[in-house]
Image (tube, rainbow, N blue to C red; front, side, top):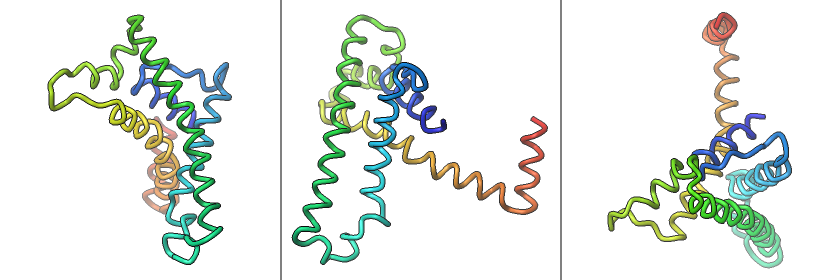
Length: 163
């Protein structure tokens, strides 16, 4: 549920889009979470062995890695394009949450040094969506690690129970 929450927050902040992650849009939420998790795995230090063993980057093995990466990227592109189209439609219709979103504010900044191209805006959106999902597991690991520390963890757990 943490990933649903993070995805929902990322979309609300970035696009002003309130995803019904546990209801009618659960399939979309699952697609985004699964895709982002796969891309994170493809790029991770542990699963990206061809960076450490150059022989794996040659011949047919390279084609396997590349085909996987291309497939997941296309899948990501589909939902990112949908989010952008929906953002543009809601912005034109004057949707309040969309007008307050990060993307709307950045695009509204007309100073020449601050004008974003479409690829730059897409990169901003992609960072917002994927970074949150990427960091959820790190935060959970950190919190569990803190709780596991004997004296400090016990004190933290007592404080949480009291609050």
